[in-house]
Amino acid sequence: SGDIMNIEKKMTHIWIGPKAPPLKWMNTWKEKHPDWEYSIFTDEMLKARKWKNQHLIDKYYNMQKFAGAHDLIRYELILERGGFWPSADSVCLHRIDDLFSSPADHAYTVYESEKAKPGFVSPILAANPGNIICEALVNHLNKLDPSQLSAHPFISTGNQFLSRFLPQFSDKLTIWPSYTLIPQWYANGSKYYDGPGKVYAEQYWGSTGFSHLKGYDEGR
Image 1 (tube, rainbow, N blue to C red):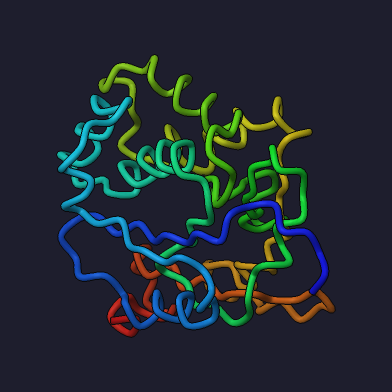
Image 2: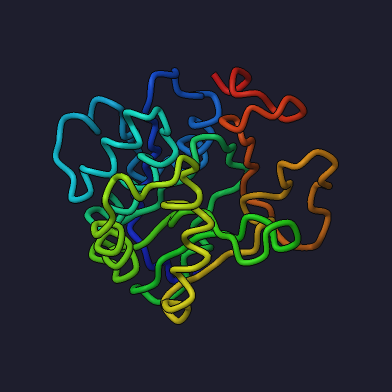
């Protein structure tokens, strides 16, 4: 398409912790975007470097709350490198190039479920290096003591925290409708999106362990 694309064509999956990555799902992103630079940020890479929020990353990692460590490194990595960082627990259905038409200083994310979780968004998915929202996230979280982290990462570093923190940046944040990447919410009985909008990916919630959903093992 002739639309201007305002991020670099760099795509990275984060996969940390002891489990093997769901490569079957992850590869769908690489296959649909052959002209993008693609990489995986691994557990070894996490441990081989220093982080601004090392004190918090270590705490969550040692608690085996890998989602929290993931959120924390996600914000630092997007701040440093830019690009698009999709969920590893998802399958790509269509190229996502045309989603990145906002001004170059915007960060991007997606609503989790406008009905089930009003105002909740996924942790930041894309931006350019030096993004002001990612910088503010890293600096704000940096002030926390590890003892202040909730045992439930979504409260301290993930979607509930973001629902409180992000409204001040609404003019620099592009939030896609949930159906673009999450056409079906994880709660049992949730219907698959059947509206006119384009569905670019399906979120499988592999790490949530819900038995009625596509299991993590199916993605390996």
